[in-house]
Amino acid sequence: MARPRTHDEALRQRLLVCAGELLAEEGAKALSLRKLAADAGTSTTAVYSLFGGKPDLVNALYTEGFRRFGARIRAVPGTGDAVEDVVQLGLAYRQSALADPNLYAVMFTKAVPGFEPSAEANELGRAALSPLVDTVRDGISRGQFRKVAPETIAVSCWGVAHGMVSLELNGNLPLKVEVGAAYEQALRAQVRGWQA
Image (tube, rainbow, N blue to C red; front, side, top):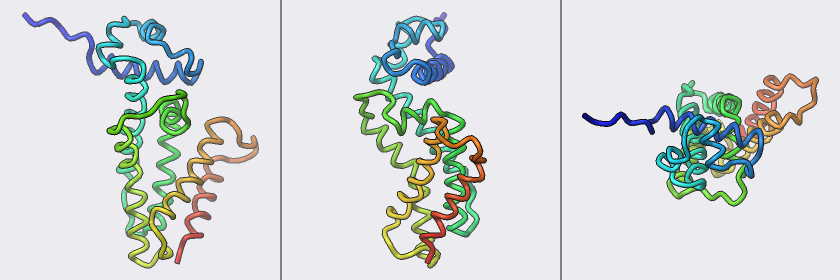
């Protein structure tokens, strides 16, 4: 009779959640495989079996973050209006960051000093943002956006989204700002600035 598999996907996901929480609450120095295993109620053997070492664990956090982020971005339905579609992608960006703030930190803020994602993880990160570039490219071809490199428009819109989300997640926005409305207004203003 086969032995039951104890190091399964459910445990892997639990370890990723615990690792993200540990990073957010105590910082990169606290992220040890022994502490992670204890917090998740498992053994260090399980952590090594599922991830290898600490760099592989952080790479898995990075990859999981971009996997979820990419799925949310790809789920945004197109409206046929590239200007509105860019805004909707920006709103999905914020929703993704708020849904997974611990993963967002690993993805975009160098939460673990010295961490370098694998080539595959880097590719996943780039691919997650390709719907934005593709939407901008479509808008340029339809005459909705100025005729500049689509990456230029995409990066500027991403910069506004990233900046505001980072301020929000770090609690650096004024208390009287209604964050969701201010975010959308800033995003719409940025997109309007690139219209033809």
